[in-house]
Image 1 (tube, helix red, strand yellow):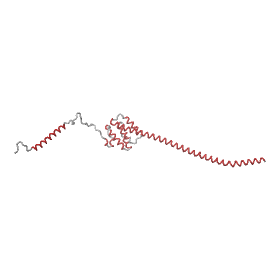
Image 2 (image 1 turned 60 degrees about the horizontal axis):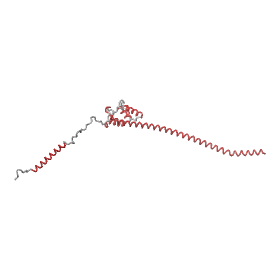
Image 3 (image 1 turned 45 degrees about the vertical axis):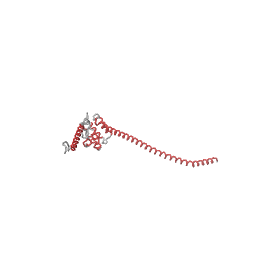
Image 4 (image 1 turned 180 degrees about the vertical axis):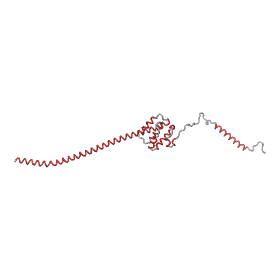
Length: 234
């Protein structure tokens, strides 16, 4: 006979109680995590995206790169792409596109200079567009000043190299002219030496012939003189 106070489902009650306790603990942990001090840092601000985004011109078509509006050319990536596109043109095409650029703004002058630099430019032409660039030195935006200065330094180095080559060419021409003059002088001296040697040989032969003739003639004259003296005495 079971007691009225006995619990036939005590085992079931124990399992249910454990489950309930686990659920309660999980809720407490979640609440603690939500209120953790690391979740919200005092003074922390979310990163703000810049309003103006930089346009990547590296994928722009070269056929349209020269028609970009001037107010959008303060991006250094644009000028890097322009330099790359200019290097892809033939010298004749580069010069043709350069003639289409305006010389009234720093953008037009810089475009023309980049194109002319790939058009088999002469030292005079290179110096000319470098002077045009210097005239707009106060108009360049800060974003491209470093890039433009590097490009300008490269152009000045090429201009100096051209001048050194010209100077070396003049020195080589002068040296070649001096060598030719020395060769001609040496040839003339050699000819004179040959003529002098021939004359000396001729004089030596003549002297030898004269000396060989004098010996017999001198003996005959001496004999005739002795005979004449003998006849006088008789």
